[in-house]
Image (cartoon, rainbow, N blue to C red; front, side, top):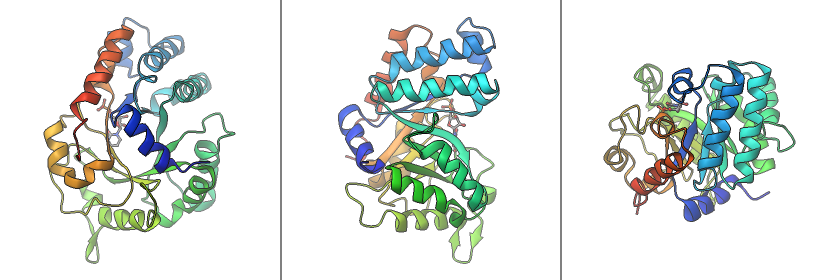
Length: 274
Ligand SMILES: O=c1ccn([C@@H]2O[C@H](COP(=O)(O)O)[C@@H](O)[C@H]2O)c(=O)[nH]1
């Protein structure tokens, strides 16, 4: 399988760097005139897939919004994965998994093995049991041509309490970025092991050049702007994937309006990192 980094570079080249989050919040279901039930979840999520997956490089379903409906919600998530990929978009599963190594193996099987119904192109992972606990997922990503996005500098205001803490000279976030730089060493055009860095962090002294992709939530509804991206990422913006959920989803349920919102999102970040 072609490595995730190579596939992502091609997707950015062909379709742009903007990622649409598929987050069926209860409030959005309501705004779309839908009920808060699994039939409405399905209608919402598949409408978004149909509208945006043919035109953007990547989509990012947030697993929690499907999990809250139990097994029938997970079945909808499986369709989101399959139908987005069939339409040519990479699926970045936002599940933020992480556990002791033996359990990480099961997460790797769930999200990175192409034979799994939830098998995605990449998955978000939490390194706070230690980066080494992610090794089964790193190994599965290498084996299956998948990718990881490791939480480094998240978009929420509570993140710095943990991520700016120092581990000797380096911050916790800096330690994660260093692990990712090592995992991506020598990869061309870019590695498969990415970091999550929020568009809302203001600025950072961390070196974001990890030769890997940077998933950038917090763009749009949380306040992050294109100007923030220029300031935070500088040259590292070449591999940045600004991701927006609510700002795009509010354009629905009209499919054309949703697609136009995704196209506008893409246009706004086209020149980033040039
Ligand atoms: O640091 C992080 C990591 C992940 N997220 C997720 O991204 C989306 C953001 O949704 P918006 O509607 O565009 O605010 C959501 O799924 C979060 O769980 C994040 O916001 N920050």
